[in-house]
Length: 623
Image (cartoon, rainbow, N blue to C red; front, side, top):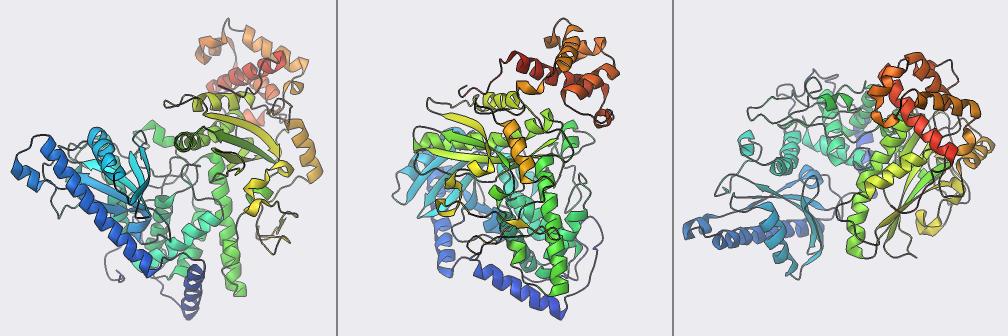
């Protein structure tokens, strides 16, 4: 793919630099490319051929399927013969950055007579199940974007379906045209979005090969550093692609080594929530909702907006929370420091890609155990629980006024000694300078109730949430089931860690507390009922009296904060919220909160505290 150096400007602003590569850039880019090869990020020619054959086979299958459905629904023979479906790819495969064993994101575009529920998740699924080369079938019709997951000849496929208003799908169909969305249902618009966004990204970068190398590098870096996961509140594949594409626009003539360095420089300095956009947002003529914080109230609360370039433009990173944004910002800073030092010392790329040792980074963790009674139940239940974990992070941020920071691990771990089991983990850390005691049992109960609302719940599906200290992290989370004997030591200059464990290097974020302080903190957190932060011991008689005053000021808290608002002055609520939340800074922490926000804080925290006083709140293990 050639450069578009002489074409018109790409992006919504002028480039930062039009400078071309130096001899040093060529050398470092060659080193980077060799590093990626040595890391095993490229598939073999044989694997590439196998994928192409699988896609050809899938295309044949859906064409036969559409003709069968059309005939069964009574269409005349001419329409049956003309009936067609077309397979498109998107995601990492379409972008050209997939690795060995990666799944292929595919889209089947079908005609109006073939629907999603009965035909796609019905007849097509049954056709596939009858084929000997199809395995691991897992339909997910209730997903935000409904998908059929399966393996075809050993290659993992994620297949979406888009139903157009056409009777016949032309072979030269162009999904990038906005007219394709005419009369499309919501799920079809979402299903088409992946292909439309992917194609638009490739049109909006100045040099596709440099973009691909840089993106492959950044995807690998994000996975090594534990910040690659949309579902966990970090960034997924499309998010990283959009961020890299914007850097390519800002430095259109730079080679990948410079693009990687500038990626960290730009996003270290980026003033979120200013959005990252590859092109202006188009209103469109179909009336579909686009990302616009001026019109859509919920868009105002997005913390790290990364906007898709195809109509209708959406924020692809709405899952990001305060905690995950903070973690990613720290990682951007670390990457920037390493790249700057690399230039001065002519260092290698190895340090940048050192893995992040999550289980050495914190003194305290939440462990979420997920169990079921069969493989199929486990797959469904696990997917549901995983999708809810980011809400637990948000609830903890909310209920502690962001004073207790959460770091969700982007993956899960299985205890091989237990059937149908996996565990998720959250790292916990107090914001510097805030009180040591929190009681988030009600928060956990609220999370468990939310998870328990799963519409497809079956007996045997269960979760258990417990607080553990670092020394109690189960061995099955470590490679080979062997716990490291020595924690990583942190370098204060770069944030990089060195460890004497089997020669492995890692990184843990800086902590101001010493281990004795952390041990005392953990002791305060742990209760024998399985989970407690703070507990009844944190409530003094004085605080209890203040809480009682708040509750007595209105006949019923359940009448709502607006009713309670009538009976309380802002000063009173600030005093109560300050006392209950242990904020001893002359109320500076709450100074900028609105009176209504303080009312809500007082009600929520007061209710939690009164529950603690009566010792009626515990972390129950069921639903």
